[in-house]
Image 1: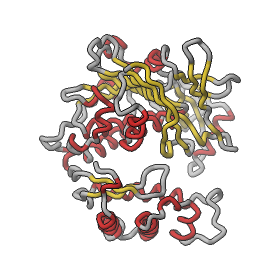
Image 2 (image 1 turned 180 degrees about the vertical axis):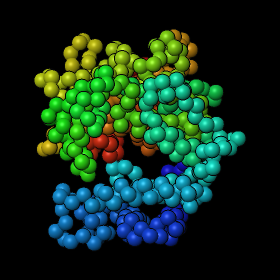
Image 3 (image 1 turned 120 degrees about the horizontal axis):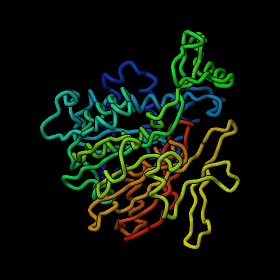
Image 4 (image 1 turned 90 degrees about the vertical axis):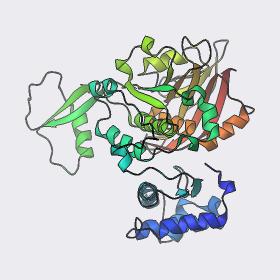
Length: 427
């Protein structure tokens, strides 16, 4: 992957024109207009001046009194544009040497050099040169997590399985043993206790384990399902087999890097594996210490912790100093409606238990809300952000490290991520 500074303006122009003139965008006039506007602004050196208001008025023809706070049109169209670009590069543009991307949390196009992605046929019959991800059936089928969503994401990643040499050097240096030749990496996902709200056509289905929904839950459920008739009976089903959305997205993101590097990896539900079975291996844990015993154990002696703030009303990331006192705090921000608008993620890298030679790593990916976990994964998979951290570390990566990541969120997903702080635990 080449950096943006190594790509000439003429190459950017050619890549942009190829997308705009493609069959994929042929009937998407609005998305084509949006891409043309932000693309031309970036080529003219005005990418830093792109705002939601300018895009709405100058790019999409909204009136001068357009208010981004009241009208989410630009955000919706940008989201659709990212998906359309993905569709183009998986299909019609899969042989493109230079790709146009619109990173999450930004309106400025980014140009990325890449080898051609594999044909979708590779999902059914992987090419001999591509080593597909190995997914543990015990962790998935027994636990029942992800289901069809995982299958679709796995197929998407298999279709994008690039040659291992395409993994940027800074990712290889930061991940260390996780990307070593012949490595096996286990991705262990925590599944918090939840309840699944389920409608029934009768008021008493007489099924063990069901709990009748309270009036408050029923009102909330009806508000989410406005397009359907009210159910006769509504019940809550206790559940321990489903990950949170941001945790799942983060798993897919890191699995993509491992697939790119042709590293064998297994996806496991934490509640179905024992700690001794993971001892001395390469393991990435996903989840918050409040519902992941593994993450809670790894953070026990680390300086950065996730817990409740002084008032006990909000989850925060805080620093626990050697003398037992608390240091810096990173407190999430909420909107006037009470939803998170800014969250924090936490990456913890430690030597694996029982590994005396430093050949294996444990990585805990956690955060405040699952959007924080997703932001931490985005950071850990970003050559740009890892490159900035590498410079802060003096050009070398320690054996043990914690990194705090900041990200905006729209209640569900992380909208970009950025460095907040770090602590080196051992060189």
